[in-house]
Length: 130
Image (cartoon, rainbow, N blue to C red; front, side, top):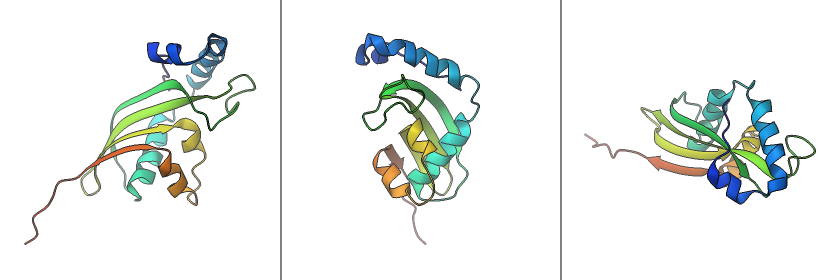
């Protein structure tokens, strides 16, 4: 997965965390699960088991006050913020943002809690009933 360190990220993290951020980026290069992670997050957001079409997947380093050293002993509160668009003909169109550590913690029992920490925009079309 390609994880970026954006200019905004550089402004919001401490200089001492930059080496840890670079290590996270390097470690996740071998992880090819971005689409699977986004599918999992879309299912949590939609409360369904649908298979979504995914668009504009993006991952960047971000701070997350709910984590401590999730990637290694020096990563502190760093996490990966994933944003993407998801579409399913029945469930609708979603714009979703979620932390990677939240996706890793999805177990089916905690979906409501994970959903509280996600950014979700949900768009649907009103259908005429005949």
